[in-house]
Length: 262
Image (tube, rainbow, N blue to C red; front, side, top):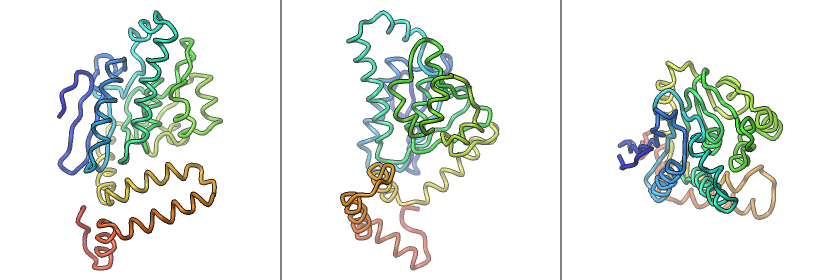
């Protein structure tokens, strides 16, 4: 476990890490310090080539209530240039999470408001409780979900993003699954057991193959065809077939045994 004041980073011997928001007394609301610590942790994790998976979670009753009110009050007293620097730091955090080389899984309980929806949207997939409450709440206090908006649109689609960003209405875990923000939702009492099943399944997969596939899908984007994209996809499959893990996976399949990474 690394030493942080507002977050916790735990490494599991099975090869995955859990990044915890750890301000339960503040409903895991984030401020400049939380953003800085999350960014520091994600930079460390980006350099860890052995990391197979990252979980993003919140301690206590809520995943995150979004931005800390005291922090927002302080930001309101700053000039445009200072606010722009502050927004840039939040943008860096979202970019680091979105582009982390290994798969990322958010686990949501309680509230996920404002920027916390952005954190969830930046992850490759998310699960949550049926009772969880989501809201793009910024317009209620005269602000806009600006920095998180590209990731939210990717997760929800344009039409739903307009609805929820402009209305600030709340929606639960069931609706979040219907929208695609959550991959699955469960009764809150069953969330940890469901997470265990997700972990068991993901840890069956080749760590290298998951990283390569994630990078490939970032390049593929919406899937618009081009000669450059075709060349990229062809080079990916050729390269991974001759890689050590690719060779091991094919051999294990043909020999009807477990591959080494399991």
